Image (tube, rainbow, N blue to C red; front, top):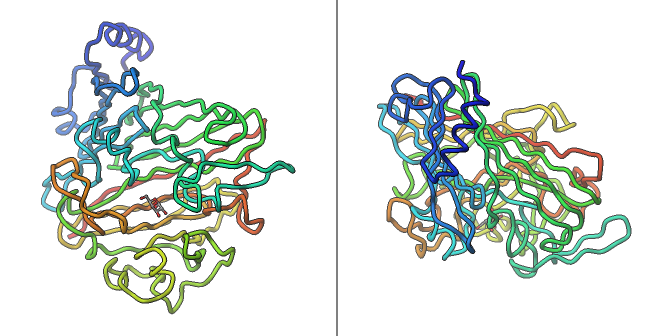
Length: 396
Ligand code: GLA
């Protein structure tokens, strides 16, 4: 084993000197190509521009057949490269090629970003906690969406590589001050991306607060297993381990009901083509211009501590598969319905409606206003913890 701590010190010195950082759990100079050959995990760092005078870095994590790029801006998962059934690699997540792509557009679709302090919508941007009412920014009228105008997706996170064993990771931290975007309490958040041995991306979220607040963290990566920019995901097959969902009103706020999916286009308890029913006149589909709902996962563990299977996505054309497991009670399946061809992605092609889908593990939208939903309240002394694993593979 490499003495990680002294290696870390040397690397920090290099980083201070403005040099590209290259770290490996074994031999630092292994590099990406030998990583692919030998499966040895590596993490490298490069400067990736700046936002409001703050430097942004891009980290590249590789382990065998998987390579991912993560930005310290928004904790954005920028690219995820995995092989198809013939071993041909493609980037299967939507994003932009440059930092400017994210900053100038304000990343309205939240490509790859960490979402906080509260994932999805809070009705009218208002909630009450311990007898006080809080007003959040209305950035998706009439509601507050994904943490407000400058949510965690638009913050520059501190980053530190995590190495050891046969995995490699990146620990991101962000301190959201009391009152930021209207939320009470200073929230200290740590999100760790780990590339697991078998083509998996694990995301561990942790947060503490100094005043009671609400927290619902997730990642907003969009997937197109045929490769980003190659067309729609209509032919992808989706399985959701969920026999119920939370129906919404016309503004995409849950009504409070928890309804069965059986007999409706919301039923993904068997693998079903995404495009088979997304033009249905079913009222819920109309509200979302397609799928944009929270499914209630069929969990054995309702303390939300154990990882359980949530979803499986597969692309018959490329053979790539993605399995999602989580500790969370819900998952937002969003079909990329608001992509309208105006954003040009990593490979230079425009993203149109349905060119990618998001599977956002989460507590239910608008939970602070629904006593019958699992609680999203975090109090001083408690630790918020959540884990999601995206596992890639192939089928014949
Ligand atoms: C979530 C929401 C969608 C949309 C996207 C971002 O998935 O539920 O309605 O806002 O984020 O475009």
